[in-house]
Image 1 (cartoon, rainbow, N blue to C red):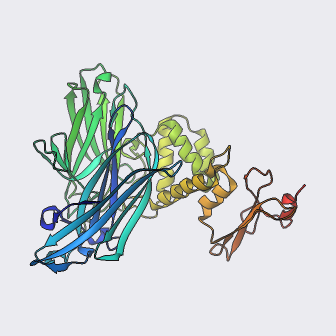
Image 2: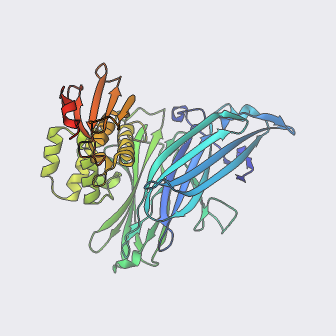
Image 3: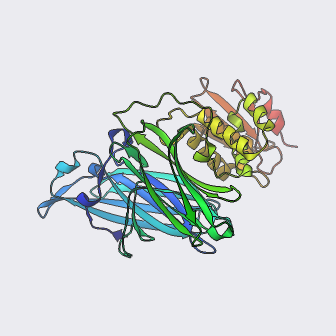
Length: 458
């Protein structure tokens, strides 16, 4: 396990009270860059509140220590592909500077081939292991399109300054020191948003010039800030850095997008990152107008039509009949991107948070159902057990009956918190572990009091 000696005064920044979610307030962000012909280079940015650590008097100062661990597993087979651990000592002259919440940020880089992974990240207080925070998330590492102009993910940073090459500086890359901001929170405490990304295969286009566009929009695509430049194609790749002042934006959720636009045929590529603004001196933006949404400035800008189609298909369990019918009538990727954006926007309970927690929870259950209920010929989310798990969540109790005489295998799922208590009964009528819903006491589900007849043995 590595150890990094840290002097708090040099690397900490204050965090607004509204950003605090738990004592250590662990946050993360991930960016994907070109690595080599087989792998991509991933950077995991993480941060936590060091004011919540316990500090002890030691050699005339106050000392604390955190333990950070990161493990990356391949989602398909749960195999470990990357693992690291750090002990991070902190030292302060006294604890007065820790009266205010302060965020420590760092970076972990690794190479991975394209695939879907699950990342497990945790931080704990070395002096008090009960003080801990952890999270896990899916990471879909997609390859860059060969021989086509493409962009890396955007890193939203706390600061970017030019510097000479320094192999000892963890934040150095391509002639810049880029200090991450894993909270993705800007405003009164951090008025300037810095951004870093990389462009690849620029010379796959023959035009002499291309245009860059940095854009900030609010939660429904209304343009708030914009920067545009004309660039000459000098090298096949480039580094794009810049900054924007967030002090005039009202508190709420925003999107930063960076586009490269060909000056000859108008084609473009875009990379998008969601962030949050906290400006308590300004009111919340309550005059959001959903019309005229600029999809190029949302997370859907880079989604292919097949990806949009698949996401909406996975969301069909909670779509209304009108939404399903309207989506079927759409043609073209732009119209479908807009419809999908509006679909999730209507289900976002709090536009003032940096993520749509409803959507995040929904697709967490989709991923879990794929892992648990996949059959030989169907993805888990397409099965009856997967659908119930996605729509209603994990059951409070599961009864598994796999070896009863003259009865095919079946399961009884109980939910105590729904409609005063309901059950779902699934039967493996084919004998190939394809459990189908044969009875439920839920008012909106299939009902068959004589469900046992469906699973009687031959």
